[in-house]
Image 1 (cartoon, rainbow, N blue to C red):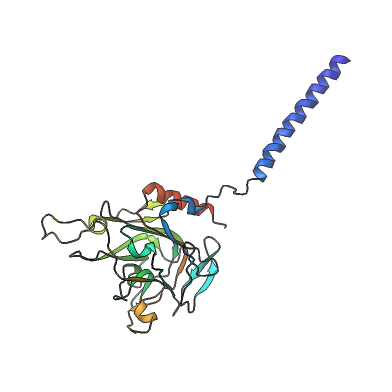
Image 2 (image 1 turned 120 degrees about the horizontal axis):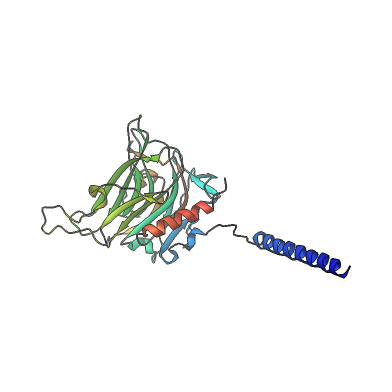
Amino acid sequence: MKNKFQTFGALLFGAMLIGGLMFTSCSKDDDDDDNGKVDPSTIATANLVAYFPFDGNATEMKAALTPTLSPNVTYVAGRRGQAYQGAEGAHLLYTLPTASKLKSLTSFTLAMWFKSPLVTGDPEPTVFEIGKSDDLFWGNLKFALNRLNANADSLQFKAFFLKTGAVWSGQHVSYSDNVFQINRWMHIVLQYDENTSKYMIYKDGVKIETNTGVEDRWAAGDDVNPRPKLGALAFANADKINIGAWRPKSEGTATDAWMGWFKGNLDELRVYDKALTATEVKALYDAEVTQIVE
């Protein structure tokens, strides 16, 4: 009998021990508030100079900027919380503080969740701009969409960035790719690296293979020998952040038909003062994906 009771007791103790381990394991998972989520703001934190979550308002979170103008802007369900909804006449205008790092970017990365209808004919929309007080059309840094024909199956991105003093001071770069889908959420990264003088585009964490005419940026033509690479950007008279519109139209100084309003969506818009590495871009995308609630 003693042996039977000893055997039964050992089995009971073992079952209780296993059950306790299982309970402890489950409790640990239950106490994990992150549930596998990664905060995207932990990627290249020291280089993040502006962040617009668009979570029901237009506040920029790094410098607590609020827009001086925000007509017709609404917010809809986004990739994380809410997102900016563009419309006819809708735009945001912010005044840059004196010490803002956005005024003196020499390299940059723009990262965002992005969705847009096809742009055909007039007008052509501005999406994001770091403005210039004496050039309301192009500013210092601009992301826009080019017009395409009505049967196009994707979008064409346009970027402009400035190196004051260079022979080719204003860099206009347009690029189409069938992965830039119409009316579909995409994580888009546009960047320029002063160390390599290269402009690059990423979609959903993967670099888009463009061509040398898009990627390699020069400060002058090949009639200059040796031909100078673009190098560090040099902004001038940076004064505003502008989202969703051409400033001459939104500020009433021009009514040109080709200047349009961005009618798509933006979410989790971030600006960095360097070109993120490919590893950082992928890590940022992966972190953003963990925040999506389907």
